[in-house]
Image (cartoon, rainbow, N blue to C red; front, side, top):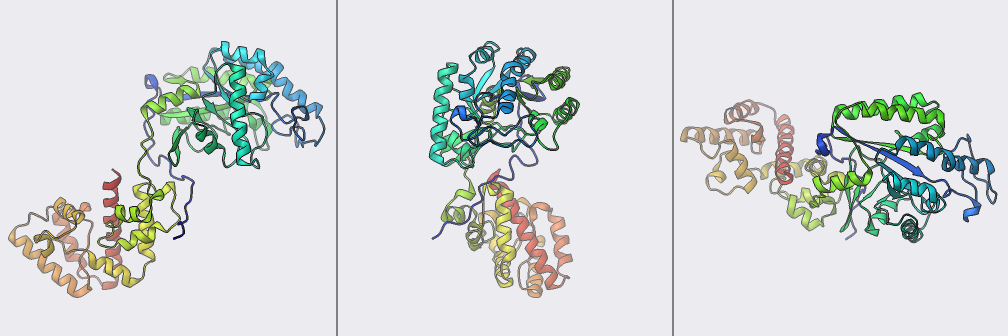
Length: 468
């Protein structure tokens, strides 16, 4: 049997109601400042690279120069190390900051590393070199991660506990997770909160980064062209997340970009603005990761999208009454992490049911028992149907009520050819009877469509019970 198609991206996340962040001290927002230290780790033939750097600089439309040094580009990066870093260090040394340090850049910056450590900043790894990884073979990237950790430890004195490649490949997050020593990986932009990712038995906390609250937009088309734009955007982001509460705001900085005086002023003003609010937690990414792992550990729940067909049918084959074929076919759809919820499984099952032939759907309807009928009296209902009917009080009818239900059941089946179906959890005993009496008069075509909708609603309730 071929493996069914699977879609690896999680398009649901926390959904409509994010988990409670429970930031320390009851803070409404966690503000996280990242300082990218890349100067001396960028593409350069002096570093053994085939061409000069062309990314994130003041040079509009910069292009790599194969086999040549680019003096202008080099001097822009040198400004970040020589002047920009120190301006930012003076401004931020009283705050918790996370440095994304390119290992080879850190090795060429002993005074800057000493200053980072003196300020108590977290120094996370930004890879071995500030180069593109998208075409890098998996084993080569794995080896580069190991070299980056070794060089980082040699230069800083301790191994990094956070990882961010930046110019990453499709393998980066998995490879960093498989390395096994990182509290968090940041090569994602998918949420306002940390979240867990899994690859088989390997689990990894993701503390997502940002490309919008990021000074890199001073060096990109349609980005910021003045410090005031950067300030306004940071303030607007802060205000919205602060109002929502329980969110994380990431700010991405580069020594050679916001380290320029005309931009640094905007950063200073934002820091003052944020500090002017109560209940703001400035934290390193490592502190956020430690907090999250404590208050929101990975639940490691069974993932329907990763189940075998037998396990999937065993778990969900009874959702559509006595019709396991619905679950069997649903397992063959393109499932993924977004289906690992009650709503996700419901969507897959309903797609199969809606696509089935009229006769197949009719058999599902006929598989449902009469309400308060003979099967109920004989205690031969499925566990799900028993609980549902009992929840509406249909297991405790008077003789008169039972006789009325049996009369209605017989009249309905005689006219429409299938039992009366209703999601009893949406109703009371009285409203069930009212619907019964009203729907008998409908055309069979109308009732078939309504019965199918009710079957789907019943399935939704049953899945909600399983995933509760």
